[in-house]
Amino acid sequence: EAQVTQNPRYLITVTGKKLTVTCSQNMNHEYMSWYRQDPGLGLRQIYYSMNVEVTDKGDVPEGYKVSRKEKRNFPLILESPSPNQTSLYFCASSLMDRVYEQYFGPGTRLTVT
Amino acid sequence: GQNIDQPTEMTATEGAIVQINCTYQTSGFNGLFWYQQHAGEAPTFLSYNVLDGLEEKGRFSSFLSRSKGYSYLLLKELQMKDSASYLCAVTSTDSWGKLQFGAGTQVVVTP
Image 1 (cartoon, rainbow over the protein chains, first blue to last red):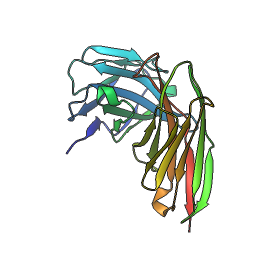
Image 2 (cartoon, helix red, strand yellow; image 1 turned 90 degrees about the horizontal axis):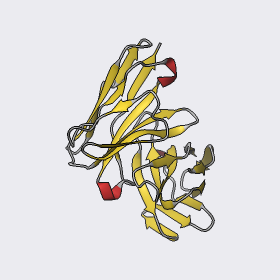
Image 3 (cartoon, rainbow over the protein chains, first blue to last red; image 1 turned 30 degrees about the vertical axis):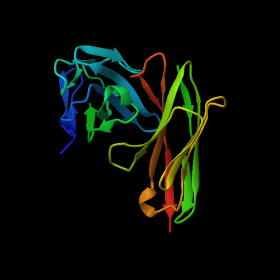
């Protein structure tokens, strides 16, 4: 089944404790992206990647890191999480020439206390 | 950058038609698209407009006017399952992969 998977689905952590949210897709998509979704603000793009070893900042990259060493994986790293990073996070992927048609993962709900 | 506006909430009756407007301001428009998001779920792609005019897909249609910075999503023959948030988004010529979404319009369909 074609899908985007994220792990973990739920995470409660404390301020300053490094964490990684994994994202993997099995559709051979070149493009992958991370978003956060907060009430009243909609989806905001954190980072995106047009292909392996190519990453670019979205609108809200501060406090996050990404890497794209393999085509299928695009982990999101929070080196020192803070409470304002409490949010619902979505990973998405698409073909490079169809970035408007993205396939989203199920989401990761992160709480930082 | 882009600024995207859409209404926060709309209510309509089952079987009726609802039109969700979206206005945008962008430095280099390259396309507008709509997603549907049911509560507690991930967004799913609905439609994409790059040229002016109407794109029809079954009960859903999307319209674009680039000169006015305006789009709408038309939902016809509303069904209860259409109750969801509808997200308008744009991409620009400056960066094809950089997407900006509006805050979403919550559509509530009543019996």
